[in-house]
Length: 314
Ligand SMILES: [Zn+2]
Image 1 (spheres, rainbow, N blue to C red):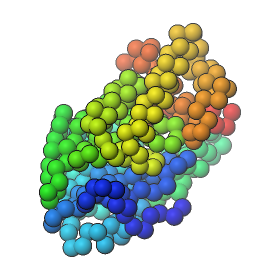
Image 2: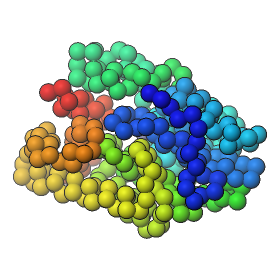
Image 3: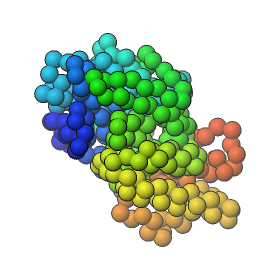
Image 4: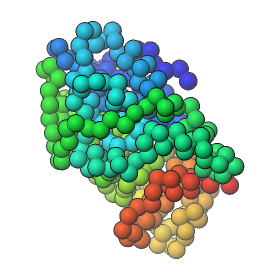
């Protein structure tokens, strides 16, 4: 796919720029927010592999001038927000303590490479991984751990900009954070815009509360983890979706349906047909079921992804 060859200014926000690949209907293409002010620069999230990260840095060069990036923020531990960290040598890498602790449970780039290349292609998961993740070069990615972790809230400055980080996880994942710069908020993956979201930690109530916190900031610009930039109304619309998903899953759980049966029942009813990647609803349904059952730990990423793949190729 064509990667953006320049950063896009965030309207009305001096010094804020987006590297926003077209992530619609795809896994792994996350938005990255650049903050350039005075003699300093920072970036919120790094792309999924070395090639993407190098393309982003080249796109940022005209805005960066002779500045170097002093701070990298990771909104959560997933590789599509962290695997490019190593291309910012010397930068402080900031994440929540919970996200940092969780890194050791995430697949490393090497493990992702092996998963994509070595999973049996005749299984649904093997086929799905090849189709959706085969485009990334995980051999050019590297795991680079945070150098500064926090719980709750952390603030730092970039030139004359104050950046506030608010911990909102576990929600999409362990230790999610949202980043606020004035009236611009970068939500990380508690908000996917235009596709059904996958969530790995939950329950949905936590994701709803994270989005409500962002709305409480009264943002003018909302930058989702994936999908086009929007505003307060765009996030409000997504909250209606999240509450509807939460209610519809609970109703089917209480009616005694299995997660797979609930998914079949929902998708037969043309459930949000304008959103892409409906198989991710299988992930969210299975995850929410485990919370509704009171399971002590949520199902693993590969278990959830395998159920989504089984739904796609049924
Ligand atoms: Zn993501």
